[in-house]
Image 1 (cartoon, rainbow, N blue to C red):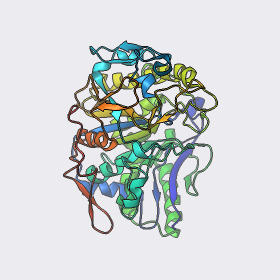
Image 2: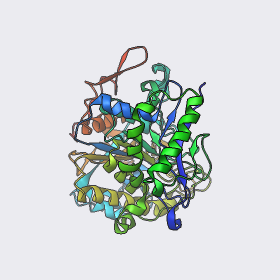
Image 3: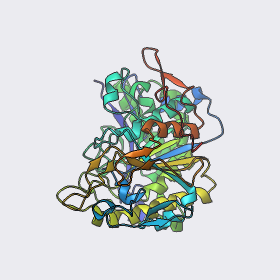
Image 4: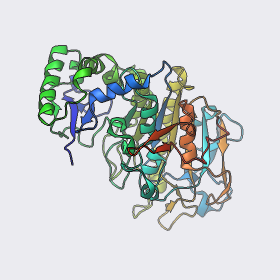
Length: 461
């Protein structure tokens, strides 16, 4: 196996303020990996040139809530059910007649016309893993995968649409976690050049690779002499490993990307209007057991990344698995729901105010739903038979509820929706026909982005 070398920018932040990822003093921008015959910065740039990228820019922000958030306590409440079913929360109306959500989402309730709720995701694999929300595939599908495996869904977008302004098309704000909640997938058979560009790390103060641009902070990117010297050192070391193919031809453009395209600026929230940042709430960088930290301002970072040219941004937020011995389903809901309400509503307002809501889609979901019956610890257990997804933006028809569960919220009785149907809809919002576009695997076999029988969700397009 070839050693993978990652190119990182490390440094201290001025005035001890946090950068976009909320990590004080030590930040990095992972610019790409290099492996023999695989990914390099030059290849990422070469990709743009070969794809002939157009002037339009559509994008998707994929928000994964690790742990299986309860559909019954968020967007599919059952107020007329018995007490052991309905739980402790009441529904409130949104600004769309007949569309109700949990009382702990008052800000979102005022924006009901800007999103749609799917109450009938039907094909969860039931595993504690982000893989299905990041690829549209299950672990069972891996048995039929081409050599290299199924890719992260943004890898298809990167391959078909390429990069814009030299900025990688597929980026990740997914924090490393336990329980499979950081299984975002990689480039799969499409190749490492299209894997998600990883922009956060669990321990940003620790060197995660053997190839680091020491001392180069985000606010020194305009120092062309220092940057070139650092890249020269990186290039010489990479050349000794035989990893230089494709770098030299695009070195000049790589320098422009680092200093001029705005990717680094997009990651630095000190460059955002403080009043806008404040809308999103306050980051909490502490890890919640094996879940992700509450980096709610990454919702703002995601918006800034798509403005910089990224086409697909994926992130994970907090931890939503509360049914064990702690029995914290309802206390934690009272803590987490208002934070999500603030951050997500700020994102939707931001997109609207900036004229981006027709071009930028947002999807929010988890890996499965929760049991209708509350257990003896006053919590809800795993329930893969149904779960929810919230979709916003993307020029879709919003202000509606799709699908319906029975009176107890346990079984789907109308309009079951598969994960791949959601992805098909997101591809459509990006301007990609998932049934007309294929990507060849290394053996030359073409593969569709989703299964041939899958269509975009008709109610939304």
